[in-house]
Structures are given as C-alpha cells and as structure tokens.
Image (tube, rainbow, N blue to C red; front, side, top):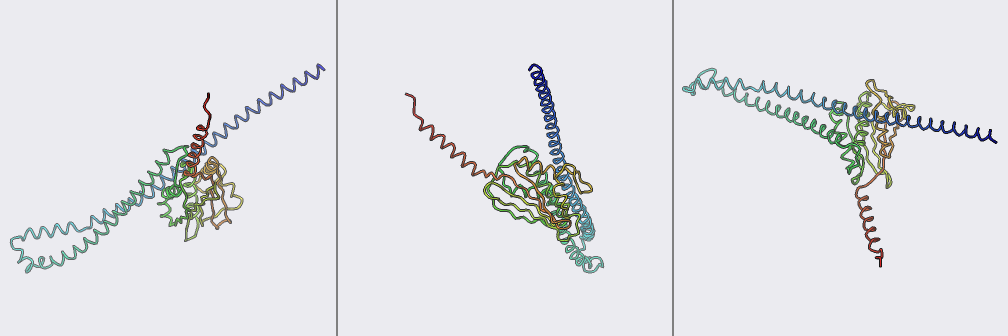
Length: 335
C-alpha cells in the first residue's frame, strides 16, 4: 500500500512537471505567434507605405514632364519676337506711317504680328493644358497623402465608415500606377448604410488586393487590362468585397499558399502583403480567400466580414435604454 502511494505521488509529480513544461511551451508558442503576427502587420504596413511612395513617385514623374513641357513652351512663346517688334516701333515712332508703308521691314510688320499672335494663342492654350495637368497631378499627390495620413491616424479603432468611400480611397492610392499600366477599374457597389469596422485594417487589405491585381495585370499580355471591384451584402449579417482581375491567374496548388508568410511569386516580392491581409481579415471576424481557373485565367479575391450597420446598432441601443427605463419605472418602491 505504501509503495502504491509512493508510485502515485511520483506519477503526480511527473504529471505536474509535464503540465508545467507544456504550459511554458504554450506561453512561448503564443509569444512567438504574437510576435509573428505583429511582424506581419508591420511588414504589411511597410509594404503599403512603399506602395504609396511608389504611386507618389509615378505622379511626380508626370509632374516633372508637365513642368518641363510648360517651361519649354514658355521659352518658345515668342516674347523675344515681340520685344524686337516693340524696338522697331520705338525706333520709328516719329515716322511710323512712312516706316509701315515704305520700309521693307515695316511692310512685313502687320502680317508678322498676325502670325505671331496666332502662334502665341496656340502656345498659350498648350501651356494652360500642361498647367492643368500639373495641377491635377499635384492634387492627386495631395489626395494620396491625405488618404494615407487619415489611414495612419486610426489604428485599431472601430469607427463608422462608408464602405464605398473606403474602397474608393484605396483605389485612389493606386490610381496613378493603374493609369500608367492602362488598367481600367470597374466599380460595382451595392448601396449600403454606414457600418462599424476597423478602417485601417480594411484599407490595408484593399490596398494589398488592388496592388496584387495590378501586378498580375502588369505581367500579362492581355491588352484589355481590367479590375472589377464589387461590394455587396450577404444575408443580414455579412458583407462581401471582391477584387477580380483578368491577369496572370493562379495555379491551383498556390490558392492557399499565397496567404502563407513569406510566400510570393513576384520577382521583387516579400510575401508579406497577402499574409498580412489574411491576418487582418481574421482579426475583423472575417476571411479572405482566392479563386482562379488557372494560369492566364485571372483571379478573384473575396473578403467577407461581419455586417454591423450603424443605424441598426443605434436603434438597438435606444430600444435597450427604453426597456431599462420602463423596467425601472415599474419597480415598486420600498414601504
């Protein structure tokens, strides 16, 4: 009996030791997982920031082209010719009539001024067009920076958002690059009310998906490059955003691997973007999946997450407050 008790105590001690070691291992594993998630998030944010800088760089290239063209046209505007005409008129201001009618240079003055005025009007129109293009590109840079600053200020907070506007902001950040690669963006939005969502995470997902679609189209031979972005409600409690491209497509064996940390098929890729997007989707209570009919057949990335309409939640809170007040008024007073 004593021996049996000793064996049980020894077994219990070993079991406690094993449980302790397992708990320590689990804590260590959780720490590693949290560190991996944080690393992926930071890498994803860095990738987005790099993408934003890349798009700003693309727009700045257009700004540089427009400013150089405008400068060249100003140099050729004909101002020096006007100065020469003014000098001739000044030299002959005392005999202007004779100069214009009898002098060879004077007789050519009127036709020259007519041609010069027409040329200057044309140059002016072209300069104005370049300046308008310049202003448009500068405004585009301001919009990209404003969207990024707005996105950077809101970290980990649930807020009221218009999903269509969030998608448009993500498209705006990539707009210059899309235009440069002649990619057409098609929007198919269902009219939805304001929802509660973590805007920053949603923005990061969308920017990564659009960037991924852009790269898939950039590397393909399809002359009709197109990205379709769809927004719709699923039932009463889910919302779905799809980003579809007609680009390179995805091999079946890679449809799940593309979301793994470090996996990439891009020559200059790091494998953080889609991995971080999938993590964000999971943190939002949703999921991100990909489907494709194979290489050359394009791809569709589908994001689903809970649909929490602001108006519905506010009505629920108001009804709860009214119910609480009603219950309070019916509680009998103590004698």
